[in-house]
Every structure is written in structure tokens, then in C-alpha cells.
Image (cartoon, rainbow, N blue to C red; front, side, top):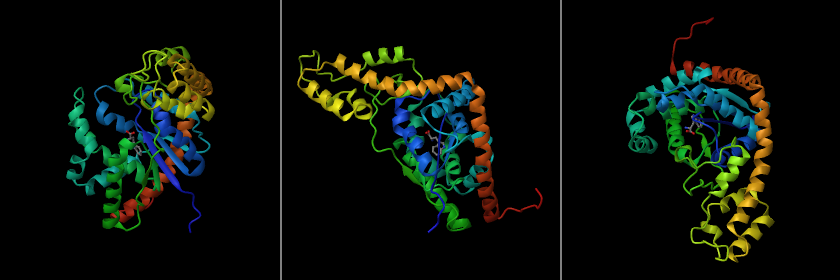
Amino acid sequence: MSTERLRTASGMRPTGPLHLGHYFGVLKNWVQLQHERESFFFVADWHALTSDFANTSQLRQNSLEMVKDWLSVGLDPEQCTIFEQSAVKEHAELSLLLSMITPVSWLERNPTYKEQQQQISDKDLSNTGFLCYPVLMAADILMYKPQGVPVGQDQLPHMELTREIARRFNSFYGEGTFPEPEALLTPAAKCPGLDGRKMSKSYNNGIFLRDAMDDVAQKVRGMFTDPARLRKSDPGNPDVCNLFPYHVLLSSDEERREICEGCRGATLGCVDCKKIFLKNLGAFLNPLQERRAHLDQHPELVMDVLASGCARARVRAAQTMEEVREKVGLLRIAGL
Ligand code: TRP
């Protein structure tokens, strides 16, 4: 058996500030994985461009802010490699080579592609970059030959395509070149938005990691609870309440038991239940926001993290590409 550590790689598009859904859905998993596997986490800025090419005014800022969010939740640049996709050009080269072996029909029938083309009407998604999104993603992943990739549920079709592309590459150019990576899903974290729909920037229903506590308090006050419970004297049902999943994530077992009993027994009102949530959310967000304030004061720290992370990622990427160019049969010129 090999003694090499297991590897993992994952990315996020820099589309805006991260919220609790990002944290409990994916980031928490990243933070844990960094201690267990050799980990590569990157800002997928080229992927952001596939759909947001028409207005890039926020892109640079979003990339930096996202890395600050990562560091504030506990990604540790000593434990994992944090980098920017566009700074490691090998991703583009591998994506190009993978595009040679990827049938257009695989991309056109990708459910995410079809869905987004239909649902997103305020952007023009007829560009080739958007169609080829999964090819670039496959390149991002396969570059580091990870056994597992921590992603949200919504990325499963892309993971399937990555495996298909790996298989096809291997069959043309050498079995075993790219291991087929598994999706590593976070065990079902439910994170409803303020209005009960999935927490999402586009629904404007999120609690963001960097929200000031006053804003958080106001958002929590407006959160929907059990719609059938109008007064404290009405018994409530935690199973249909939007707040309760957060007690599962943030409250102690004992608090959770008391909340359940008090809600069903009509002795604990939604206002008090929200107070407990707010206390626990504050305890979670405070240390995170302290770290963030430090990074806001020292933006050079973020640049240092990216600089050393990109250098490390490049070493790995260069190794993979040496092998890939050789296997694909490209002419190798000595000394270049
Ligand atoms: N598609 C991912 C998302 O929207 C971002 C991403 C790009 C990614 N490349 C990746 C995720 C590689 C995992 C691995 O969240």
C-alpha cells in the first residue's frame, strides 16, 4: 500500500460574500479535510468569468474577500494550499487538452447547463466558455489527482462528467493516469434562508459570515418560523420551522432538547428561541470576525497566502503536465 497521503482539491467561484450555507454546506468540510489530506483549495476566477464576463468590476475584490472568508473560518495556509486558478496556467492547458476528447453532446446534456440556460435570463450564456465549464472543472480537479472532492450536492453532475473525462483520457493515453475522484458531500447540513428557501445570494435571504451582529440580529428577528404558530400559546412544530435546523448546527444537545419541548409544549416562544439562536450564532461568528478584521487591516497577509499557495500549486501542476504532454504525444523540446 502506498504511504502517500490522500489528496483533495476543490474550488469556489468568487461571486460575492460567503454565507452560512456555504460554511455548513462546504467550507466546514474543507476546514476538516485540510488536516486529513493534502489539500488544494482555489479561487475559481476563470469559472466566474464563464457567466459574469460582461461585468468584471467586482471580480478582483470578490476574489480577495473570498480568501478572507476562507481564512477567517479556519483554513490554514500551513495546512493546505490556497491559490488562484488563473495564476496556475496549467489549468488552461489541461482544459484545452481535455476539450479535445470531450464530445460536445456530453456538455449539452449536462443538467446544470440546461437548467441554467433556461433559468438565468439576465445573462447571455451562449458563450463557449460556459458550455465548457465542466471541462475546465475537470482540469482543475484532475490536475491534482485527488481521490475525493468536497463539493455541494449541486455539483454532482459536474463530478460525474469529470469521472467520464478521466476515463476517456485514460483509455486513449494510458490507464491509471487520472484516478476517478469521488464527490465528498457534507453529511446533509440543512441551511434554510431567512425566508425558508435555500440560502442563496440571488434570493437575498442570506446571513453572511461578515455581517455585523446588529444586521444579523435584525435578519434573525425577521426569520420565518412555524407558519401555523401565531402566538406563543399555540404549540409549534420544530420540524417545519426554518430556525430549527440552525439549532441542530449550533446549539448544545441540552438547549436543543429544551427548545423542542418548549416549542411543542407552547412554553417557549419564537422570540426566545431566536434569542438562543442569536447567542450561539454570535459565539460562532465573533472569533471568525475578529480574524477577518485582522486581515482587513493587513491585506498583504492575504496576498502572501496566495503567492505561496500559487507557487506550491504550480509545482504540482507542472508535474502533472509533464506526464500529460508526454502521454498525449506532444513533442518535448529539451531545455524549455
Ligand atoms: N463549480 C464549482 C462551484 O460552482 C466551482 C469549481 C470550479 C470547483 N472548479 C472546481 C469545485 C473544481 C470543485 C472542484 O461551486
